[in-house]
Length: 167
Image (cartoon, rainbow, N blue to C red; front, side):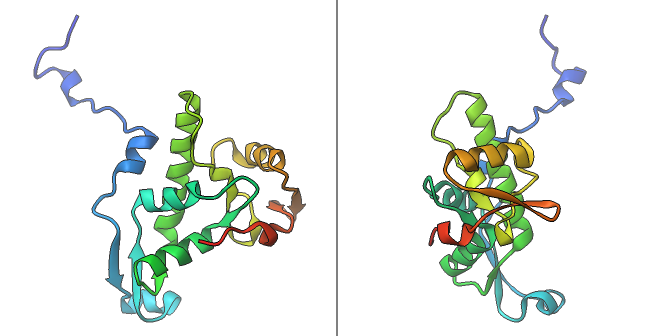
């Protein structure tokens, strides 16, 4: 039995998949002048708000055995766009979307996914918001030869600096 035009079913919109969210660039990237309000945190100059796929593409470029820190991704994106800084909030959100899109693809049987577990927070900290949480990432990182240690309440990759990729 199908829905008639004008029925309640017409108002229901399908929720976007993570892959669709990743592909939606929302008019980004965009470089803007740093406002007075933002200058206390970032100084003077310009800020780039990257597109989700730009963040994903850098994460995807990290080879097995290597790691990236989200701050290095931000530095690379700022440099790419000739900006003073790259927005940490949107970069973090887009890394999270990229991680969830990759996991969605993995569950669909795809093998060439973004290795999101190789992208760490600053200080080598594992991102607890990525799919599977800290434990899943620890497993994936250890399978690739990294040692994960407890540091206070956080899990970090030991000597992560030695494995950082250069963008």
